[in-house]
Image (cartoon, rainbow, N blue to C red; front, top):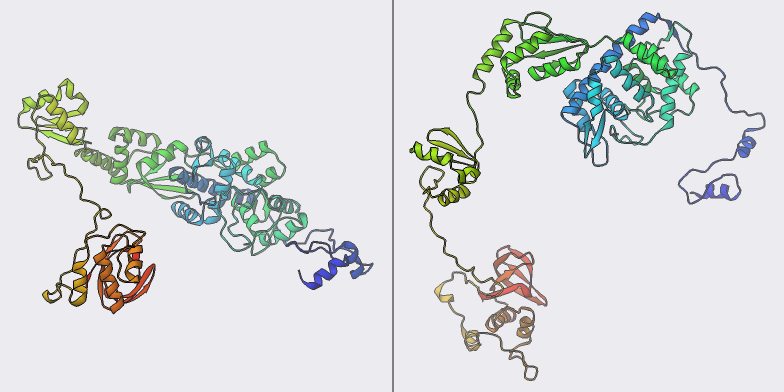
Length: 581
């Protein structure tokens, strides 16, 4: 808070707290003093005037019926997709943009419709979260079997009571909002929905708004505290679009469905829905081009039957399915027969089945199942058919799960090693085969102990070098030859016989080095000679490095590494072997 605001707070001209993020409030007395005694808050007793057009009830109902029928069909397709492939929720909750796009692409629906259906279905109990997926509930199965009018009524009532704007896709910061995200209740969003219907209901009878975009101005007059969405290009555009998609508003006028919602009359809502929406269709027109066309909303049984026998190509006022060899084969895989498929189709076809379809079903069924796959852990075979017949009925071998598929072949559900032991225990003399069909030779493994670990035994493998460099020369060679094979035990009185302080320091850090290695490393440090070390890094990786220009800085040494061609630092305790370079 700046100095000006703090000055106003100290003089009670602004009400608030200097440590709060909330903005300060100007008292009403200060407002009146600043604006003068004749100032009054703006008040418009009449709603904004809008341009009206004449409409008949038949025109409104026809438009409402088309919108409601389309929405109900899209809702059925969307929820069927969610039931078959439940969308996965985000970690933060709700269905994200990727899943919404997938559902919309699979059903041919726009994102506003997808969000509107999911939110309404979630509020109506048709879908619920199970783990991280939005899964269809048992109520969905009941809903899917109902008439289109009853399906629409449930979604309408759920939408009417929603405490949010379901098709809103962005928040104030422009971030994408999840759908069905278990959000809290927003009373201002509910007021916007109710205000939209009230604004249109107040119009004269037989009149509608010429431009539905100006309904938002009247909505604001009826509900001044209603909440708009950040994505609205015109006032309350999202709420008005939802009402039109559902058939609640049509051509700028209130429909019978909207009037029933506004009056809170469930019986009237059901009556109007049954009158405006056609009943579900239980028959299909099956053509010689191997398509099935259903006008209107198909019944749940017809929808399930055609989905199991054909592939859906379009969803709209008329749904189209196409039969193919793959779709018929899918039905046969599910246990149906050619006779059963034809009988089911004759029940729903508006005429006789076309000949190309019956030929397709017969041809696909003729080749279906000619090749079979059986599960088996191993195969037992023999040219002695009598022996195999005896093994197949042997009581002690019943646990192997044997199945005879040919006179010389048995399938076994037990792993090969266990089956081999069981056959030998029963008195038979089987042999195992390799992958190429050869007899597998079984050799007894000879147990041997593992080699000593590197921690118990320090071995330094010298790198190949020329004969001239086979042994150190000069004074260093004499000292190395005179050194004992291991470090002497510590003697507090006499001390360890180190020749230099460098040797003593190196021996203190490099516990695994012999006295010979310590002296050789100390000589390389003093004389600035290259040296080869066996080194174990902190990660446990073992390497052999040749280093030079050694800088002795306990507990590490810094040197030029010939392998990496760069300066490197080595921990002295990680050096486990030393040899001349």
